[in-house]
Image (cartoon, rainbow, N blue to C red):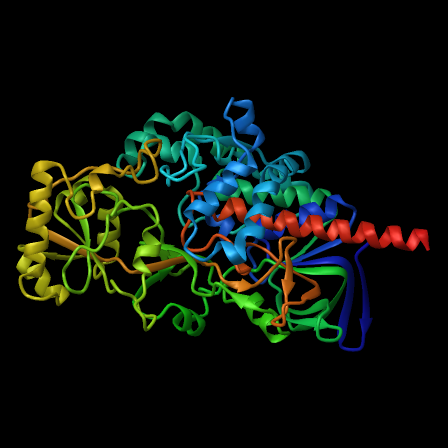
Length: 555
């Protein structure tokens, strides 16, 4: 039972488990702990619940899941583990293999548990693993996304403010990748208008909104208490290697929480902390594409009590366009670079990558020996036909007048971008020559299918850049989430700098030293693993409580 008591100026609260954050990892941990009979308090810094998960497309990578099995797709944790090992950066296996194994062994179990204990339901997409040439890759079965879910499932529990998406979430993730809304928004809206009207009338949420709605409903049904607009400021410790709770502030009040079983940090990344972001990601960046409350509170508090931090230079990042969200400047993560007549050039005016590579964020963040970016600042360069095919880019260029740079000639465009004289002309002429023969001799882009043939948003191939006006937009790192934080063991328990476990402290999601860093293995390898790591933390807490209760009874 959750309990409260007044002691002087402070309010003291008691629970079994304190969850810091309210995104996918946090709610998954809370759901598992509450299902085991533990009292759970969820504390969210923002006035909005759901974190980056609520803003997301809902793509979820879960290997060997029961939906795939029902569809006749053969998969196993062993094959998924082989895929993670084969695609990981050099040297990662030594520190991450135990965590990869825990994830692949637990992911399907997590998905079945979530669907059993919440109204959230998933369905397979047609997407393949994008790193298809590596051992263990699958042509289908690991990518899922939420089905629409009525907001009314939360009504009986009271009023909760779920974080809105930066774009209206009328469409499911399945529809987004199937119908090419990016290039044909009006036509798709007309074709799907009956479904859209039905969803509006029924208050159905899709994508990340559906995910958070379902998880939160499951948590509330099991008795979890949720406190929003409350910032956790410090962890309460006993000695040097034990956490017994935390202190948070709300509406000018200081509240201490004594958590008898443990505290789970699932507070998101630190991309909202400009100083720390510059420390770990020096060089050019464009936008932050996550809630402005993601300022690394969890990483800071864990570090203050001696936790070992790792992977602080890892992040989910890519290109983005300028936008406004809740009245503030924001970056909207969209895949506008997957166009046949668009190329990426560096500050020297040279192409530096296959623009359709899946892990483009890792390329953008490539570093030299001094730790500085090799290719930044970078620009996306195209001709006027890019705007003709992309209504959203036209809208963005009109709305943000200084974002897109136009010029009647490539030489004039290069001058505006301050590129070396003649470099952009030479680069584009070389690319146009490749287009005539259909072979990209530098990066073999013609062999790429971006995220896979199932995603119609991406228009592959080669098309010359020749129709003025020529255009360019900044294409530096934009951050959806950093992926560094406290190092954990395979049970989600945080390690001290001396290598020992800090008892009572757990971490999940992008707040942890995430075992799948910048180099992703599928479109859903943020949400899928994050949900699983939250579940693993909740499962460890449940087992720990059962063990303690068993010991008390036997004594």
